[in-house]
Length: 316
Image 1 (cartoon, rainbow, N blue to C red):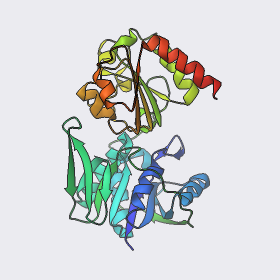
Image 2: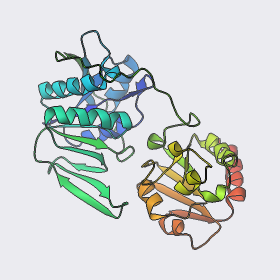
Image 3: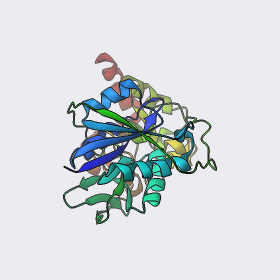
C-alpha cells in the first residue's frame, strides 16, 4: 500500500484545527505518515491515532528549533519526505503551511499545487478553483512525490483509531537563519482564524459602522463563530482587512456561513462558495446572495440578528 505524508501543523501548542481534515484526505491514498517539526505532545499523538495516522516522523535540527527557522524547516521536511518514501505530501493551505510546503517542494523539485479542494490518488489528479470560482481546474501530477496544500474544511476527518509509531529524523543539512520567527501575534479581535472556523458570520456595507459589528459579535459568541467582513465594509473602514472574506481577502470553507447585509458579489462568493451551508440575510429580496444561499431571510439585519442571537442563547 502507498504511503501519503501529511505536514502536521502545530498552532498555539496544539494540533492545527484543519489537520484532521487533511489526514482524512490522505487516508484515501494509503497509510498516513505525519511529519512534525521539533516535537510532538502526547495529547497530539493520541489525536492523530484517532484519525488514522500510522506513523509520525519528528523532524529535528541539531539543537535548533526548526519551527523558528522556515528556510531550514523546508529543507529538513524535504529530506525527511525523501527518506520516508511517501507518494505525496499534503498540508493545510494556511499561511504557515503554504510557506513550508512551497519550500519543501522546491527542495524536492516536486510538483506543487496549493488551495486544493479535491484529490484522487488513483489518477494523481487534484482540483482547485480559478477565475473567481467560475471554473474548476483538474490537474494531473505525474511526478512523485507531489506536494499539495489542502483548503481548510475541504475534507472531513475520518475517525479510524490505529496504533501510531514515532520515529525521529535528524536534519543534517545547513542551518539557515536568514529568516527567524521570533513570535506570532494574532490580528483583529483574537477570535478564531477565518480560514479554520467552522462557523462564520459576515457583515456587509449595511452594517454602517465598526461599532455595529458588536451585533454580530454577540451572535458569534453564542455559537463560537468567527467574524468576517465584505470588501465594501472593509473599504468603508468598518473592519480591518484581516477580516475580509473574498477573492482579495480570505478564502474560507466553513460548515455554516451567515451573510448579513451582503449583496453577494462574484468576488465575495468566490471566497466562500465552498461553505457547506449558506444563510443570507438582506432587506432586498432580489439580492444575488439569495440565489447562492441554502436559506434566505428577507429582513433588516439589525432586527434579524438580535432575534437570532436570543433564540440561540435559549438553546445553549
